[in-house]
Amino acid sequence: MTLLAPLHAVLARTGLDALVLVPGANFRRVFAKDFHQMERPLAVIVPREGEAVAIVPNLEMGSFTPIGFPGRVFDWRDEAGYMAAFMAAGEALPQLHGKLIGVEGQRMRVFDLLALQKALPGAEFVDVHAEISAIRLHKTPAEVELQRKAIRISEAALEATLQDVRVGMTETDVESLLLRNLFSNGADGLSFAPIVAAGDNAAKPHAHARPDYHLKAGDALLIDFGGTYQGYSADITRTFFVKEVSDYDRAFYETVLAANAKGREVSRPGLTASDVDDAVQKVLEQSQFTEFRRHKTGHGLGLDVHEAPQIMRGNAQVLEPGMVFTIEPGLYRAGEAGVRIEDDVVVTENGIECLTSFPRELRIVG
Picture 1 (cartoon, rainbow, N blue to C red):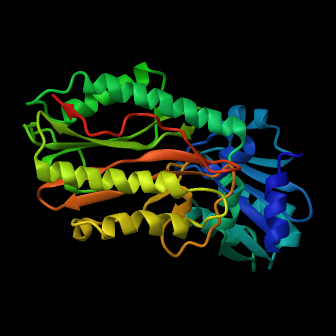
Picture 2: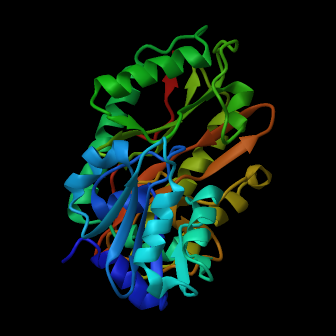
């Protein structure tokens, strides 16, 4: 298989005349190399017919050359600017003038697109982010192993952090412990900025840790986080209670736990993402806490922490072996508390394997 074979397959399926990749998860999946998006544009243009071209900042050539790009490379220096390289690439691709070209709508910046439009006059650019990202939908066994490693690192970091949590600590104190433990256990990056939220802050699904809120007895402590390993992400949420838990909060927690268990129980190949979400949501809807629902069941996980498939009602995507996604039901009482329990799973030939193993039973900390 040639390096560009996954992209040629997308071109064959879509009937497009070319695809453009910019740095991001799809780029990394194809070329096994990560480049940062910055003020210096880097783009790869892969036509259905003819030689591919790349537009690369000269200072990145030492990193770009080893990927073995099978096409022409137009590099540029800061003092000259990038537009001449784009125009040279356009001259090398006359067959694309006036043609239909697919781009990653969730990754490409406006100035990248404007440069392409000038270099390829008359071309029509369309968003095919989902079609390109489909090359990452089914993880290989090697990719699953990297995710498994990221998850084990993250779980070890969480346990180490919990050992030191005490009443009176701030949310940012806990966050600092978690970050230190992630890297000391072998993470090479963060899947996203961790969410460490206690008390009323835990009722905000995407809260930020507060430096001035001190943990107190009875608080819910929600921790949503993940480390990366060789670029692959973990995404884990567990909710704890500090020192004590009320009967009401215990029932609140057990409802989320039952929904999480239902998601893990029903998930299997052949079901749709909608089927899984429907089963999970029904557990929450049929409880006394239905008014506190806020979001879908989960999302795909890989080089991006949020990718396909989206586990939500209305998504007819059929689950197939190799797909990795989260099961993360939650309930949120505004101004009081929130509970989310999140696991990462991979679809197998007969069901799923839960990649996360951190205990889900209600736990008192501090």
